[in-house]
Image 1 (tube, rainbow, N blue to C red):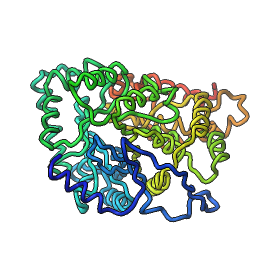
Image 2: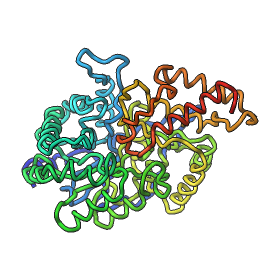
Image 3: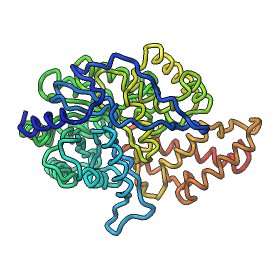
Image 4: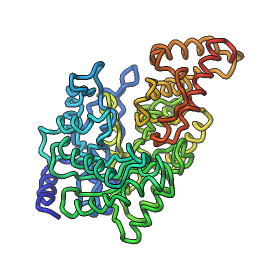
Length: 473
């Protein structure tokens, strides 16, 4: 432990009160009352708590006092037109969101060099600059998957990796990073990719030395896709070759057993980490918003249980109810989402076993609806032909959830559904960026953490659109 980290602990102890979950990570034992003041439109009218955030602490992580709601900085609000230097982020709105988050107890901020067209780290740092460095935790990543599989010499792969690493310190305006991750382990090439990126170059050994020197406080990896990669990296941990302080996985009640769009159920991932006592950071607890924009009858099912809870709060409570979860990340672009999510964790009300089973049954019902498992992560972008891939998939999924994807002309709602789909498609996605312009070049699919066959799904959407236009469904 460095003197810097000792000061951090003293500083955190001096912060205001909040619900702290400590031990290996001990859990709050009481069940608190949920917010229940709603206006006629179903929105909360009660104050957003400023001093009730739930925190997790692990001795293995220097007892960092981490808010269980972490801010995912992949979806910062953007400008309608980029700045002169190319910056696409609305810094004024980011500042407003971060100020609110800090005032309401959020201490964990997760970014990466490639987020928001490469501007996320800088925007995050600008928003946090006014706050003492000890009052928040920065997580960023070695995003070398962006140039994996190109046949680069080891020396060039190492140089580019070092550029990413050193630039993160510059962009984040810091001399140490609290949580540093090997980014995207498991997709875009599987085992050969992580060998090329981390082992053949020696960059992982370098990062271990950086942790020893204190420039990295905690070292981990984020996992997507190939379970062989996940198992191999944990084998290295078991053998003592490399020690992982934490691991980031996709986890939610739909993927727990069904693993829609992924290669392995997150039930397996979580329990493998828990039995090794490795703290877990959760990404995609809402599946890119899909678990907050559910089919209407599924929302009604959730509301029947707890009318005042949003669909998103169910998903957050699920993710946070597991004892080895350090933080649940959410990319909160809008203030109302930030406020609702803060309520879900201020304090966190752990799910009962009966409520977990209720969500698993809900997931079984959701499996009947053929949405495309896109999380709007933007890793597939930019498309070389100008297509807006996430917007196309988002519109299709929205229409599925709202019942506006009729199976045939015999559907009693066919006329209204047809019009809603086509009008919404043209409004949401410019004509030249729609699925009909996909050339199936497949430059996108290798970058997709959900391993979606994007050209195949684009063809699926385009065929459906054409059938609606020609009235041949």
